[in-house]
Amino acid sequence: MKFKVFTGLATLLIFISLVSCAKDVKPETEAVRDTKADVKEPTKLDIQFRPVYDLSTHLTLKSYLGDSIHYTSEYLTTPESIQAEIEFLADEGITYPKLLHAEILARHHYRFEDAVIQRIFNFTDWYDQHAVRLLRYNPQSLNSYERENLRRLEKIIYEYYPLNYWD
Image (cartoon, rainbow, N blue to C red):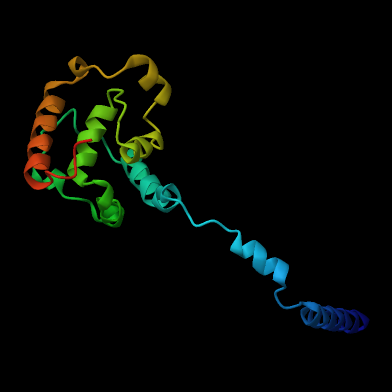
C-alpha cells in the first residue's frame, strides 16, 4: 500500500515538473530567428545526394550481368525501385541506359567526366577509386558481351537520348 502511494506521488511530482517546465519555454527570440536566417540554402550536391546514393545502392546490390549476357529490351527497362531517382536526375542527363553503359565502363576502372555519374559509382561498394587512379581504363579488358552491350547501349542512347548523354 505504501509503495502504491509513493509511486502515485512520484508520478504526480513528475507531471507537475513537466507542466512547470512547459510554462518556462519562451517564445522564439530575435537571436534564434537570426540564426535561422543564417542557414544556407541546400546546394545542388545536397539536393542530389539521396537519389545519387540510392542509385549507387541499387548498383551495389544488383547482379552484374553486362559481362555474361547480351542486354535485350527486358534488361533496359528502368526498375521501379529506382524510377524516381532516374526521373529526378533526368535534368543531369541520367537515363537507365546511360547508367548501364557507365556500369560496364566502371567495372573496368573508368573515370567519368560527368560528375553525377562519377559520384554514383564512388558510393558503390565495388568501385575502387584508388584502382581507378592507378590502373586506368583499358578497353582491351572488356569481354565480347561487354563490348556488344556497350555498342547496343550507345545505339539506344544516340537514338532516344541524343541531346543529354555524352559529356
